[in-house]
Amino acid sequence: MSMPFYVAPEQQMKDRADYARKGIARGRSVVVLQYDDGILFVADNPSRALHKISEIYDRIAFAAVGKYNEFEQLRLAGVRYADVNGYMYDRSDVTARGLANAYAQSLGAIFTEQTKPYEVELVVAEVGDDASSDQIYRLTFDGSVADEHGFVAMGGAADAVATALKEGYRDGESLSEALKVAVHALQQQDAERVLEAEKLEVAVLDRNRDRRLFRRLAPSRIDELLARSADAPAAPEAPAED
View 1 (tube, rainbow, N blue to C red):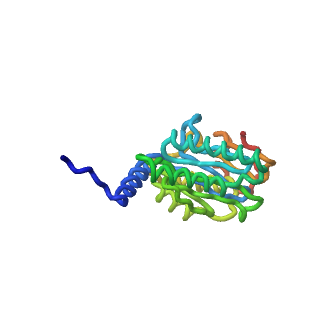
View 2 (view 1 turned 90 degrees about the vertical axis):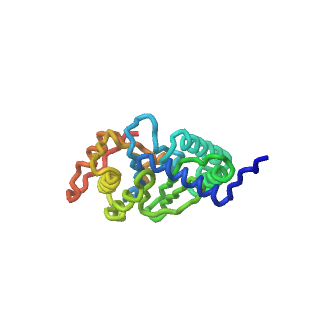
View 3 (view 1 turned 135 degrees about the vertical axis):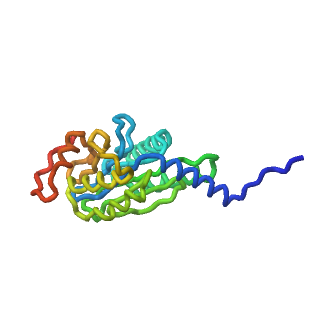
């Protein structure tokens, strides 16, 4: 009679974590940065249909890397969470912190209880009335949560992207300056690759808008921002495409 196969719990957790990290590393990166008027999201993503960046609620947005079907399930769950809480209580009661806690519980349960962990990494961000009240939370596959400030890089080659962000990012940058820093950082994934507007998914949480602060930027708007000279006087920001 054969003995039952035994794997120590510590080894199981390590194997699951390695599996999830490898899956996440295969994907292209996403970066999230604060700029003077809000929070900028930039994804290396040529698809116009499969979004890595999405609106969750009035002042809250979501960015993800990893397996699309898994983070899309989490996005939909987040929208439901926000809608139910906003309806039952008040719209102001829906916060990025509450959503991050809900995601952390779900991801933690999946990681410990299911055979296969989710191969995802998330950012939940909420824009405040000023930069000091912005909230950016990064969640990993095991439900860990980090409160981030300034910028976040996740996905494939995240270390190289984060290093470039650290070198180029400055507090209080304009939208065009922050976008240039983000695109330069994303290009560190592959030195031979140039990221054009059509290969980028870009959105912002703009604190100067009313109520719904999330907006996507069209390729023409991305090109316009990237073409601006860093030392030229800043022109008034034209409305971006919803």
